[in-house]
Length: 126
Image (cartoon, rainbow, N blue to C red; front, side, top):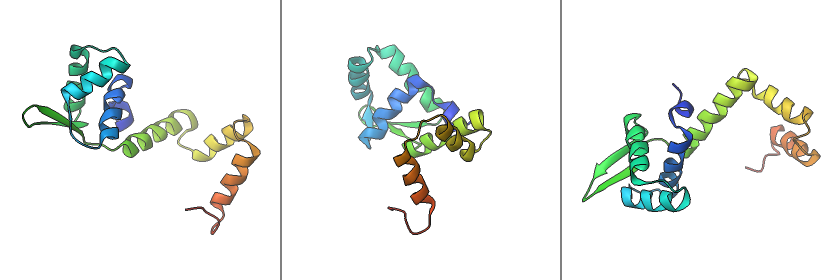
């Protein structure tokens, strides 16, 4: 099972908070935000946290109370999602993905020019 498949959409809401905070986060902090933004009650959040810990995607550490820390970075998750999408829809080919964007009219002329410049050595904005 890939990292992208490990984290469900609901679990991703918990991960987004942990990634954003960049520090250990207590259950109370998670509950306060998720209750306010999504309307979830404590048992739902406890279940999501337990599942993430069982998948080894987060670590729980007891200080005075439990605090949670992500074991995977947001970048690792995004890259896994990107690869899963490429594999699923385009046989793992980024070239086919870009071609689909171009032929589907999803890229503007400006976007295409920017991509061309990106791939020409010496013209990157990095």
